Amino acid sequence: MPNISSRPVCLLRKATIAVALAFSVCAAAQDPVAVSYADMHKVSIAEAQRRLSHLNDIARLEQQLQRESPDTFAGLYIEHHPTYRVVVKFTGDARSQLARFTKDSLFVAESSPRSFELLKSAQDVLAEEMTNLGIEFESGLNIKTSEIDVFVRDRARAADRMKILLPAISFIKLHQTAGFLKTTTLSGGNGLTGSTMNCTSGFNIVGSIRDLGITTAGHCANNVTYTPSPSVALAFQSEQNSGSNDVQWHKQPTAGTPQQQTNEITLIGGPQSSMKITGTTPSSALPLGSTVCKSGISGGYRCGEVADKYSQSNYNGSLGTYIRVHNISNQALSLPGDSGGPVFGSNIAYGTIHGRGAAGTAFVNDMYFMPVERLSTIGVSVVTSPFVIDTIPNVTGPQGVNIPATINFKGYPRFTVRRATKIVTCASGWKCSDYNGTYTSNVPSPLTFNFRCNNSTPLPTATFRWRTTLTDASGIFTNSV
Image (cartoon, rainbow, N blue to C red; front, side, top):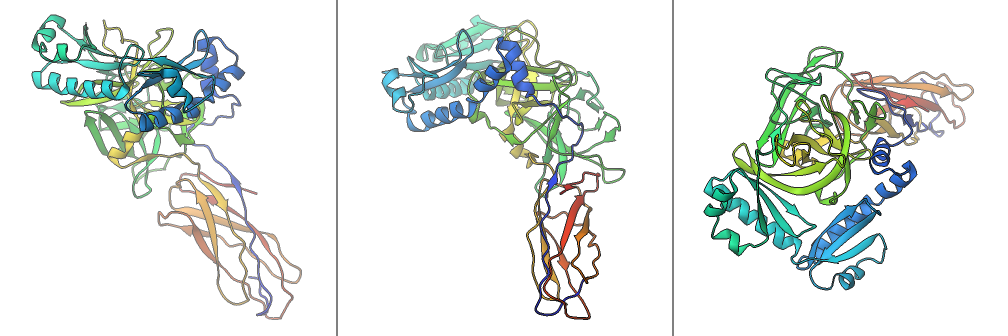
C-alpha cells in the first residue's frame, strides 16, 4: 500500500460507468412505440414522436382540471384523425373555462351535458346496485357522449330489475352482450410455463427488502417456470387476484446460477428485441386516446389506444376496474397466454395484461390491463434503473489511518457484489496496489471501503487515481471509465 507522511494527503478520484443489459440486448436507435404509432396513423416517425411528446402535458392538464374544476370538467380525450388534437369537455361555457387553463391550440373545448365527477359517481352507484341484484355486467364511461355504457346478458330482464334506478339516471345505456371480460388463461407460447396454464412475464420488480423478482397476472398458475433458455423454476411470493387487482410475483430460487435482471422488457416480434424501462406512469396520467403497447407470448408486440379507463365488472367475486385498449384496425391485442405481459409506452411501464373481451362481443379484440400503481398491493415496484455506479467522491486523509471511501450506485444488484478497484496512476516514489473487495449483505447505496496510505519515509503530498468496477452475483457489471 502507498505510505505518506502525516502532513501529505491521499486523493481517490471518482469513476463512472455504463450499464449492462439483462434478459435480452437491444441497440436499436428508434423508439418502437413511435414506429408503431407512425404505422397505425400513417404519419412520419418524426410526426409520431412529436405527438407522443405531448402526453405529459395532456396528462398534467387533465389532473389540474380534475383537481380545480371538478364541478364542470367533463373529461378529455386525444383525437388522432383527421387532425391530431385534444378535446376538452366542460359543462357550461366550455371555451371560456378552457381559456383559464391553457391557450395552446392543441386543446379544443367542447360542451358536455354532465361533469366527469357525476358520471363516475353514477357508475359507482350503478355497480353497487347491480352487484346487490346479482346481475352480471360490465360497464364503462363514454366521455365522448357523456354516458355510461352497461353490458348485460339479458337486456330486458336487467331493465326490469333496475326499473327504479334507470329512470333516475337517464344517461345509463343498456346493451346486450354474449359475454364479458375473459382473463387470458389458456396455454400458449413459451413465456411462463405453469402447472395449469402458460402466461407471460411482466416487469422486473424489487420488493420491500430490495429483493429482485418478476411479475405476472394473479390468475396465472402459482407454480411457474421461466422458459426462455436457460429455464428457471421460479419461487412464488404473493398475489392479489380479485376486484381491481390481478397480479403476483416470483423470485429466482436461492439455489442454482442466478439469471440477470435489470430494467428491460422483451418485445416479442416488435421493431426491436427489447426496451429499457426508465419510469412508470399511473393511470391518472394516461389520458383517453393515449397510445400504449403490449408484448405477450401468444399475441406478440402490438399497440392500441386507451378507450376506457373505467371499465368495471365483477372479477373473482369483487367489483374491479381495469383499463380497456382498442386497436384502430381492430386487431386482437391480447391472446390466450398473454396474461401478465407488460403494457408500456416509450420506456415507461403502464401496467400488466389482465384479459380481453369475450367472443361475440364488441370488445372481443380489446385488451384490458391493470395499471402499474396497483403493484403496490403486493409490496413491489418496477425496476427503472440499471445497476450503475453513480459517483465515487474524492477522499483525502493523512498517512497511516483508514480513510472511508464511498461508491454511490443506482439500481438493484444481486448480492454478493464484487468490487474491483484497480490502480490507474501511482505517484512517483510510491508503491501502489489494488483495493478489491466483496459485499455479501443486500444493502442500499452507498457501498463503502477503507483506503489507507503508508510509507516508511516522508514524501510530498501526492494524488493517486483508481478505477472501480462492480459486478453482481448474476454477472451484471458496471463498465468503468
